[in-house]
Length: 421
Image (cartoon, rainbow, N blue to C red; front, side, top):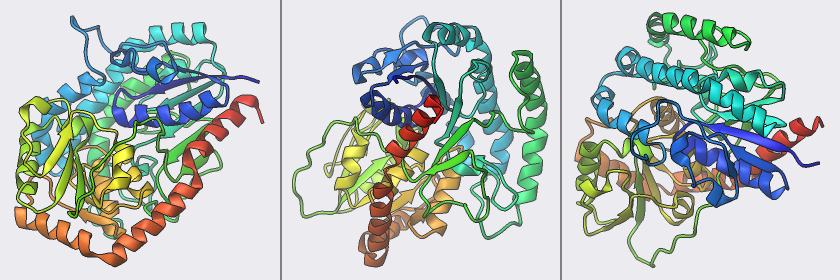
């Protein structure tokens, strides 16, 4: 029996690429896969064999936008907030992000109802952090994917999401949670009331999205919080979810160590930071592959570097010795998938939590993104490139992650749910 599976990912490359990977397996199983992605993705998903029935999250711009352009502009304009301690960002960064997400959910509700009526999906899959009530009132199984750090699935025994606080030091946890409650509860109450008005169930307390009939979260066991925060039977962890749609990447042989540097499609919009890191890395003897991002025309690479606006990341990471990353969940789990140590320069949202977890679990180094010194960066690079024990442990973790076949585990679970198996 062929299913129609409707995916609605967040309008950013991480969640969309995750859904592309899972959707590609379902498509090859003979199912129809439709993306209700944000409108700036037009044409990019049909090129991969999927159907598109797209939504606007705000009034359409006068001129066409690149994929995910709204969030790139938002990051660029609010980048100064990333220099603040995470507890101060709750009011000035995290809350405004939630408000933008809420506004988008409200705006596209009528369009989503039309899409669901037209597409008649058998299963709906959402990879986002915000509830879209139309997805929960369609009368078909609903799958939630968490492709951000799983601290967003809260528990008393784990650090608060967005904090970047250590797992072994609870001293600041309560204060952070109290500040989150203070800054977010009125907004949550208003959003929850609107969600209920649309016919969807009430949201869990201070949560902005419902649990699904099936909940998939992407995080390798080597980094996970399973012992500290057990989950119910409707939850399933994917060791990784690495798409297989990237083109191949050819890299000339070289005696130098090769390092991949990426702040992600959103973080790379902070041109000042990109220039700062590129300038420092250019003074080392290593070879670099640089994901330059949407403002690539404003960047100049050193002679030891090659790069482009877009790169096939999942084809590059297996070829390198070290990954320098912002700590987005996709890049973090992909580096673990291929057994590569990381230097993490977190910028926002779950990136602080990923950076902290990579560091405290011994798979890399977390640096202060805006206050690191060149010597600290150089020392981290040298240590990770020369730590044979760490490299062996990362490689072993990578082999186990790849053997778990997360893409197919996710696709099979969605398929079984849709078929009622």
